[in-house]
Length: 66
Image 1 (cartoon, rainbow, N blue to C red):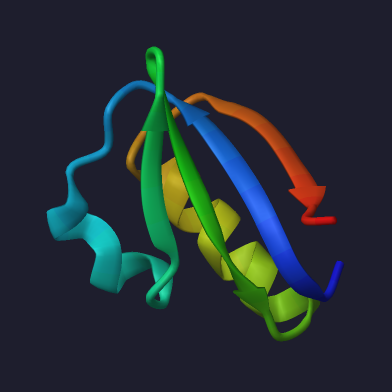
Image 2 (image 1 turned 90 degrees about the vertical axis):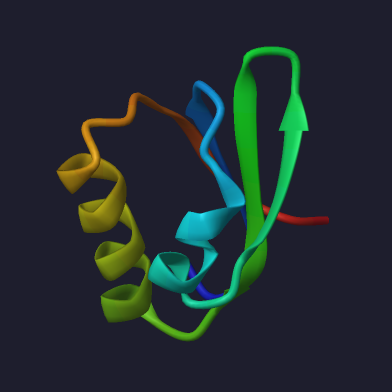
């Protein structure tokens, strides 16, 4: 997956973590945190997903932005 991507994780992720997610923008909807940003390549995406795993966050979805 490459290009603008929307990643949704369960829970409220504090914006202090923004630098850990390569500058992705944070927004919130109900009980979820929405990360929106440009994914450069598969390695970049896997780095972000690994960070989500390392923080023990529940991944809801990963989708290209329209």
